[in-house]
Image 1: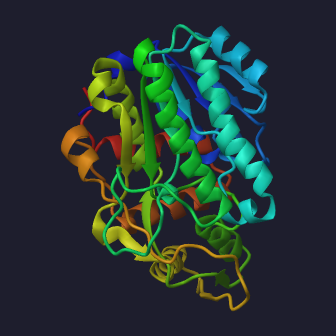
Image 2: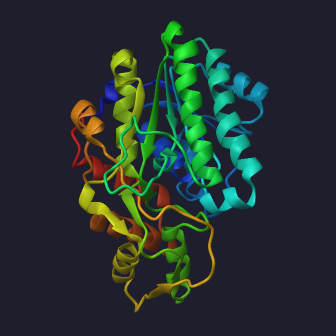
Length: 357
């Protein structure tokens, strides 16, 4: 599979969550491919947000700051945009926050998803929908093998549970409504995504950057936990080629898809912290945070055989290289460089390794 600029030229795409980390990167990429992107999301959470620093607003055909839980506004804006593809990224994305406010997590991640599908049902132009969930949607039993797309949904914490619910909602809408209306619907479950421009609290990369730039030791909650780390551009490439196939072959490509790193890049948090310290330099250090913390899964891997065999997608950047690119982004940010240009250059660098028509 390859990226086809002719497919994306002037194609109308509706992205929810475009002010977030992944949504901002995806908006930049699709604009460079020639797409007409409409964004629908809450306003950026800070002046540091990737959306602000990379001037994502310049990549948008239209921009709406609104809540996905507002169904009438959602419908109105999607109908006005007349997209052929909808990519749903808007969510409450943090495990820790889901413990602090579970109602917000469920209302955003479950009813927000329902509202998205209802907006799609009211918009005749839509031909394909991609709902982005998470690798944490699986019922984690601590198995050493990677989770496959047909493994049971579950979730110990409210965030994981809410995303499992979003997967079930997606399956129901696919069977109950979209099969008859010929709308392709896929869900994508990505690994622990890293990259420049993530400033969320209680995430290892932004926590690391905040500590190192202030010459402090990084405090790590669960150093032995193993996660499927991958650069943000890896799953985004998968989303782009999956959307192409959803339009051309909806019956084959509708369904669930895993996008994770190669097995050797599923590493412990301690290994990630070591690499980040070396990349940053300046005697950067970390230590374990001995305090009490809410439950998080200790071991998680994805089986991406389906994406590799059918979609012909595969990870390109190793974990070491992904972390170098990530640290370079933050160093450029702290050096007051043009982050729109820098981010686009990273996309171009990534696509040099990927076939493009």
